[in-house]
Image (cartoon, rainbow, N blue to C red; front, side, top):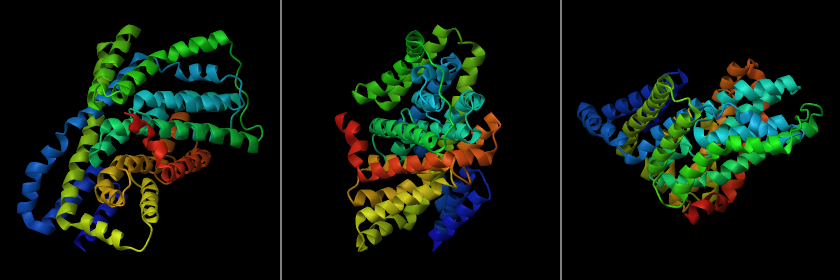
Length: 427
């Protein structure tokens, strides 16, 4: 009863828009106070927070964020959309497909879905509308393309999940490559389907010469090099994910220097952005560990494991219901908070049935990310709407077909876990 009461308080605080860190931390402290009194609260606060944020693997998060900031300030992303457009050429809906391609490339150095959506919205959405695309389709494509950053390395969410689930960060990052590519393919397929159904909704792109396409490939080269550097080192086992993140940050800084954009103002801004993002993530880690200690003390997790194992229901059905729960949570909660709060409870159940934790993490993140482009939270939608000036309702409407496409990819990966685990198995 106490666990249910504290969980209810947590949900109420979240619905009241209390900052997620304070909602989690406050609920955890209240639960510990009711469970063991002031002595338990003081004991936990003296040890748990420091232990939670002192894990070496957590250093990968600020380093990946710093790498992304250096790349943004280097200026190489300014022509990214145009470069991908030149490669796609005159295909029907070519500009929309270029948005997906640009989103995939940006994801390879970003790690943040909202940052990716914001960057694309300022360029590709306005261009698509000017070319004759419907505003709804233009904005929906960009909002959906932003979600690729959650899966394609260096995904901050995959790193965060790996640390929370206590699995290899490197293996989790590598596991996201094929699912990320499949989501990109699904988004392109959805564009082609929408063009066929809605005749005239997406014109052809402008033709480009082979020389222009060649120059475009050169423009994408620095980002491709950074991606291969970070992912290649981890895949080959030469470095840990944290060491690869450090090398990626150094490589991105070198890119700033080579491009002549390494001013003190840009360097300072990069560090400030990386610091603020990292503090937000570490604060969630700290709060989640306090709340998690309360859950541990109540023995809820082992009881749930015993209960699910005693049910006369196939394990696949139980795991599928858990997965669908993440889809629902994604509609209302931040993805980092979802992982921090639920994985310590649900993962023992899933692994108890013999399922792989890295496969489960990919499914969890894919399903939770759908919430970024669906009502009522839909953070990517609000970001794109603000940047492009297109009404929120239109963006949501345009994003729904792409949300369905992402869900279908997640469903396919759920029933075919070998696709997710293929590359980690080669490491």
